[in-house]
Length: 349
Image (cartoon, one colour):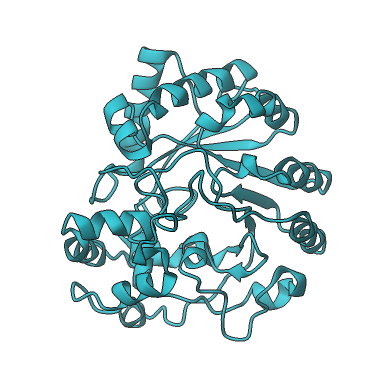
């Protein structure tokens, strides 16, 4: 997977446009439309079953430029959630009993309101998750970050696509593997991933190429063995996630001539059981500007919640949103192929 140093946006690449991505996805000849397949399985229209995860994407600024990034995040991006929008998120959250707050980005830690959001959510006694790229923990400006996360019992969900330096660096940037290992060792010293510490450290694996992830338990067992033996690292669980055919991974698929083949592979592996459990059915995703989406992928394709549901955090109505109809498209094959894929890993055995 070729790694680029600038975002699609900074390179003025046509794929920086959500409209262009949607045009390509809807025009694929490799599969019938996702909505048709959903209908044939008796699941169309797809509806939310309630909201248990309040996912906040605080922006696109990141200290890495990964080749598979669906956000097109990068050091050259400046979109970030303001304090006003963060306050609207906390106000909406306080009006509900949604138990989990999932903070993502970019590198969410680089948003000046990141720690404030965590403190406010913890004051509301909600479980908080930080989707961390690991290397951010080593930035001089974030020297106390690990201690802060531990103090507030924040669950860390950390990206690591491979236990091999070359594969990780090929996808995430030169030197990222070494930094990731140092960060994981730092987290272990703070108690993360250590039995009975109460500090949860989960890893995220995604394929380094145009293929589906292997069985989650098999990958977890191999990572547990390799990381412990080579680096003395421990973690709680590992999640496998399928690369979405959008943004920079879509660029990779098109450049390498793999787009149609990958879409066909996803569609041929459609799993009705996984479709029943897709994450959009139990979460709401809030964009950096406060717009509401069914998931982080719809967010990047600029497909906000539809069918008369409130579209901005300042208009948040839990009762209407928790039974909303989900907006779907051909990219949804990425969450429903094989064992399925979600922010919490595979969906179906």
